[in-house]
Image (cartoon, rainbow, N blue to C red; front, side, top):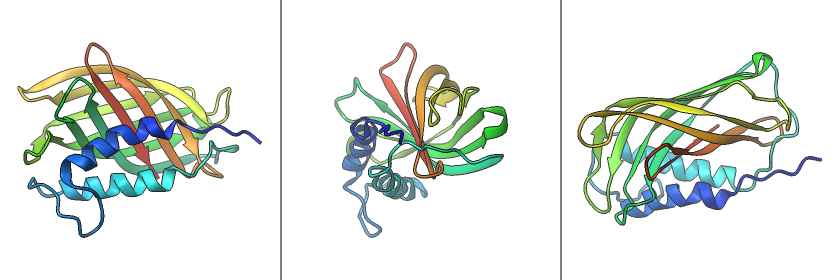
Amino acid sequence: MLNIKLPTNLLLIPTVALLAACGGGSDDAQFLPGPEGLNALFIEGEALTAKFEPLEGSTSLPGGNVEFNGIMALTDLGSEADDGYIGDVAVDVDFASNALTATGTGFFFQSGEAPGQTRDGELVFTSANVGIGAVSLFSGTLTGDLDLGAGLVPLIGAGDGLFAGDNADMVAVLGGVNGTDLEFFILAD
């Protein structure tokens, strides 16, 4: 049995930093003020993290197309205020052609205890090596534009991913953005 486990401590760092900035995470938690939808993303991020933690790498993958939904987040590892961005992600996987596309939209920016802010942009993570080699592991690139505070900025990065659960029940990706202190992650089911 293949026993691969994504280092969840690396996935938890950005989520915990974002959640800590807003006061925790439960359905009735009182988060910092911010645009509608921000709190729901924090709650979803915490729920996905809790669901992912006990899972191991998938030993088999389904056939055909599978869709996942979840969060895409970026944390500024150089920030003392736990600056971060969080948005929705839709992941489409075509196991027959070994392709994955994860599109992040609807981003919010959160810094320390300041109210969250809506940010424009779309980031896309793509992989063409899903299911090749180690069954549950893959790598890919991140491209797109995100408003980092002074308008849209083109971002390029790379990351590694994992399908987790008995039959690819969840997908997780962790990577970095070239030329920045930004780390990105995707977590979806």
